[in-house]
Each structure stands twice: as C-alpha cells, then as structure tokens.
Length: 144
Length: 428
View 1 (cartoon, rainbow over the protein chains, first blue to last red):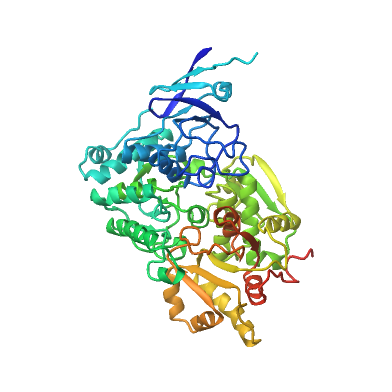
View 2: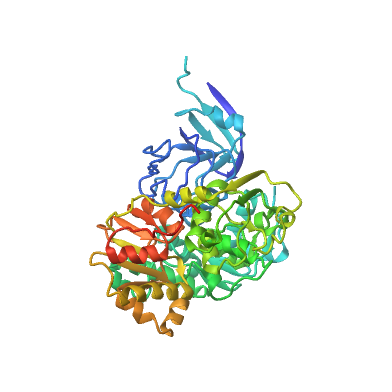
C-alpha cells in the first residue's frame, strides 16, 4: 500500500529509507552516539536502536542546543539517519543539518508532518522524501 | 515563507563582506525560514558557546570560517573552551586532544573574539544592559542574561552563535520580541524560612525544580527574596537550564521585567499556578544526589558555572576554619575548582590564594570537567554544590554524584566521605 503525505520541508532534500519510529522526543546530545548512530539514552524507548540510513520519525529533539553538533558530527561520520520526520519544526536539529550541508554538502532532509500523518507512519514502512516535502509511505506487509 | 532581507543582508549574501560572512548569512537566512521569522534584526553583542566542545565538525566549522577570513563585527566573548590553555599538562590531558583544542581556540581568537573563556560571562567583562539585543550561547548564561539582566537573546547554540557575531544579525523571533517574554506559569514559594532562602543550596534546588516543572515555558516565581546575590541567581539559572530548557524566568520584585505580577504576565493569566513548599525543595535537592550519606568520596568539583571571586573568598573561609582545626584534604580526595582568568586575576591579588592551595585545591581555568578529559577513569563518586554539575555528571562522566552546600563539600573532602550538615534544611 502506498500513500503520499504532504509535509513542510524544514531542510529540503531527497532521501529513502525504512522508518525508525519513536513516540518520544530525543536529545541527540547525550542521546545519540555520533560515531555509531546508536541511540544511547538508556531511558529512551528506542535505546539501542541504530538510526544510520533510517528515516528517523520522532516528534522533535529535546534539551541541549549541543544536539546540533551531534547531528552534524553523525552526518560527517556517515552514521546519520537518511532523513528526519518531525511533528514540530526543531531549530536545533535543523541547524545541525544546515551546517553539515554548508560544510560537507551533505545534509539530512527534515520534514514536518501534521499530527495525523505523523502518527500514521509505522516502524519499517519504506519512506521516500522529496525536496518539496512530499513523503511517500509504502507499507510492505499490511497487518491483517 | 521567504525572509525579507535588508540591503546590507543582501550584500553580505552576495559575498560583499567575504566568503565567511556569506556562509554565515546563508545559515542565518535558512534558520530564519525554519523559525518562521519575517526578517533578520541587529544584535550588538555575542557570546560564543560553539568554542567549547571539541568534535571534528566543530573544529572544521571554526577552521572553515577562520580560513575564509571570518571576523566578528560586534563585541564577542567566548564561553569556556575544551582546554585549560595554560595548565593543561598538570591535568594529564592527551596531547592530540590538546593540539586540536588549541587549533580550535585560535580560530575563534583569530576571528576577533575576546578570550574570556568563561561560562559566567555576566560576572565579568561586557555585561549586557537591560533591553540590549544580544546573541548569547551557553544555557546558564542565556537564562541569566534574559532573566536577571533583562537583555534579550534566544537560545543560540553551537554554529549559529558565531554566524550572528560575524554578521551582527539574527532571525527576528522568540525572546528578542517583547510579546514573547510574558510569564506563562506562576510558581509560588510557600512558607520557606528566610534562613533557607539565604542558603546557596536553596537556589540550585529551586532551579532544578523549576526546570523540571517549566520545561521550555516561562516561569514566574513569587516569594523570592530581593537580596539574592549574583552567585545565587547564577546557580538558579544553571540548574533551571539543565533540568529544563528555561531561557527566561521572572521573579516578582527581583528581576527587571517583573516589578509586579501583572507586569510579569503582561496582562495575561498564568496557564498554571504551582505552589512550592519546603518538602518539594527537599525532594528536588535529594533528586540531585545519586549516593547516600557516608558514601566514599573521590572528587569535589566546584565552579559550575565558573567560580567568582566571592565564591573563592567563601571557600577560603571554610578551608581556613578546617586548617585551624589541624585538618586538611583527605588523602584520597581531589578538590578541583573551575574558574576563569578574570576571577583568578583577582584571586592572585587577594591574601587567601595560599589558603586554598595549602589545603590542596587544584584550580583550572578556561574550561570545564565536561569538555576536557580531566576526570580520571577510577573516579566513582563526586560531590558538588552545583545543580547543573550534579544533573549532568552521572550521564556525561559515568560517576555517582552527591549534591550539597559548599560547606558540606569542604567537610566531606576532609573526611573522605559524603557528609551533610545537621542544621540545614530541617523542617522548621
């Protein structure tokens, strides 16, 4: 089943990947290892999961503004998510992606979806993101 | 929505002021779009936080801007860096780390920043004025500048801080605008004894509690004493900006945008009213410790945010009293105080520097224990009087932590285990 959602591009770009879904915000600083892409915040619901190459679906970041540097560093190290889908624009995450784009010409596309669309994405859905903010969602195995 | 740019903005974006300013302006314009700002606005001072953390990206970002000829166009101070630039060898810092940290530091000073290297910039040089529009980084400093001084800044973190300093511009949004500075939550202090309200620990515990309750809302505190010192408010700000993202609070009769309740809320009603009692504060205080009394102590850390001259004086008095009783630092305990050059310069002209060094205090400047690898791997338990340090130490340094007053820290350091004062914080 394929659906097309219309989002707001916060950092425009194209990306593809399988959804990694978190219902809970995450502070990238202290929450994501910028060398491995693993979620290291032990209190987080997706602790232990790896974001590398995934479309990371999380409501927003949290806490420290140093999260910009953590995201940028993970992009530099090649372990960043393929894209990020948020529920609210998050300037701290956006900045990390924009700076990486300026420095290395490699940003992570970030799209904001409405609440209904955001929560319609399930773990492992195949996601394609387009520069205008369109999000194609393909659910491989429909739950019966 | 596209951002309306001034002629000067357009010129910078076209490369008129060089490639570094062009890159900085591109980042600012993109961030203005993210924040839905209609235009950019001027700031007249900056404080850079991005100089503090050493990662490959932060170093390469600084080197790119410096190599492209970046220069700050407004007075710009520096937060603590990743290294004690003069004394790092005494603290066993790895040479490779130090070499990179020195490169990063040089980029920022080459761009014309003032080498203050402190996370308490409001206690030193170029303190912002009431109403001044500034671009400050460092969470505790942002909270202090907005709340205590009444200057106006958003939470500028790594990267965007230096972009603002190079161009003198920021997206016009958030706390730069008066209408976004109104209080949202009312926190009423109920029956807190004056003696408790004069203790320094009260401010860190209150800050910790406020941060957890307010998250990123603007809290208004009713009942705070008017005689709170700069150091006490510093600890309140640091703790509130750690457990929460508090960038601005008001305190009725204490902070400059809150002469009255009506003024603090700007004519609006509080979203919530929360009463804070002594037992809430006691809970906040015990939340900040992960070890019980009598736990074996390895290290005391004071100076988060950076120690002021007044704090050095208070510490010297406490240590003098121990010395007169024939006591000194426990054999297996280290005692580190973190500060900045400007406070240390005053300390050198005082008559009590020897009291501190004779007791066994190690003083490190320009940096902090979270950004420079100075805490050895066998350190298991640390004690601090800082709510911020207590909040971050377990996660960032992998240690257990005890939170207590400066006097409790000194006594515990002498005895080699975590001790509490009998008299403080008893229910009255």
